[in-house]
Length: 216
Image (tube, rainbow, N blue to C red; front, side, top):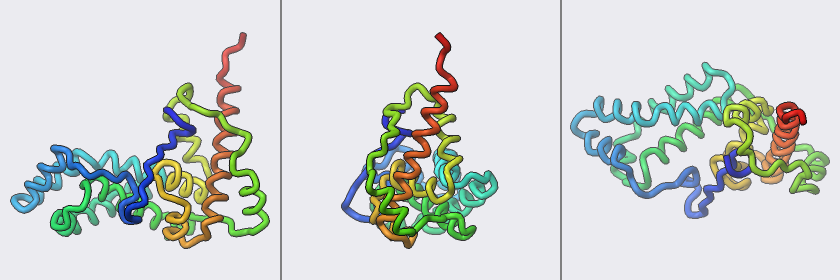
């Protein structure tokens, strides 16, 4: 991994509806799916499923710790993709996987919300305390020395609200303003939860390194 905890800065300010993994060019698989859609939707969707279902499951698993929740959310995502594919093709706006990716993220957040798991703190004192130190001392830098699966488990172990906002901001590239709108919270709340998540992950990374360092 490169930057802290695999953060990927994929930002765009063009359109809030196209902020997650924006991509304009279609790859050959997407081109073939779209070509097939009007001829044989079953074949086209099977091609979509084989190519992208594992990636979409990965998106759901980042947000949802329970395997059954992730599987259910993947099924909901695939259903929405199938139901709305014709409209997407007619609009021809952006790449198919980017569109499906956004559906998976939104479906995952909806699942958390339905289970009252997006729990964030709006306590003013806590927000001020966190935002007073926007760059926490605990900064492990690059994490190339830590297995990817270990990093994933650290993120899974975050409290639900922290994990949700960390994924939305650090991995999926939404701004705090966009996260606030999506989750119906204050922008400062999103910032607070993100920096708290970073601190927790930094501590976990430091502890892991101490535990796995070679004894000289």
